[in-house]
Length: 303
Image (cartoon, rainbow, N blue to C red; front, top):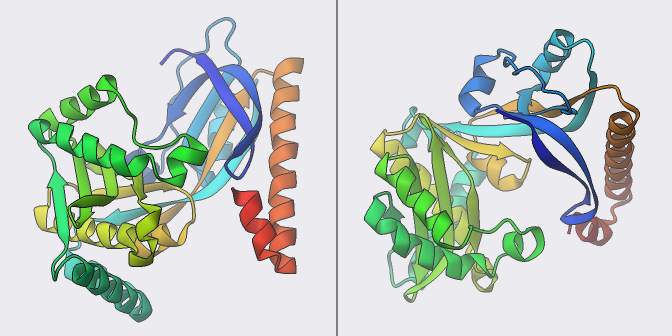
């Protein structure tokens, strides 16, 4: 786990205003590690390394990890809920755990999309190596239309290397893909690679021209149904973020942080404090706008 040149962006919503760079050892915790509740062991730094960036760390462990490295300065890069779903409880039990309003809403959305599709959902599930090329081709048709790709550069990766990685994971039964079609056209996709027994909510999107049919929510509902029937994986990691979609489908959450531990050089401290002050100012502005009810301005800020 050697250090690498790591981008530390200053962002307002999806817009990156500036990027600071430090040479950091990156260590991301899997969901299983985060649930285990133990601070990870970090490899020793090499000469020229600026420090560590630890992501997905339970907030309760940040102090312990910092105490193990007393010569480094600690900065919290961001704090967030990491949502996940327990796939072992069974679909009926999971569905019963949702609010009555959520159950009704999902049922209505699924019925509406099924009616638009001729009476039944046109859902395709992909898990085998020889299926991934078709999944990748059709999912890319959707991905290029999504805000994730247009604004964030976070669409489903394109090109032969991306497809080769998907096929390699499928050969180890470590990936799942889902596509919803309407009139033979792909309108929503979800791709989840696995870390052990945990599927990771990695790439997703829907055609904005079909937004009124809520294809993303319906696709997630059917993915949960299929995964709980399959019983291959134990957890579904919705990763960071606090959107309604994740709150609706999750069964649990962990309060997590992304933690910077840096050598106390002038350059490192200047970079870390710049990030801290900037992130704090953005968070304060969002809270102020929310209190004022400035919904349109807040949406523009998030974009």
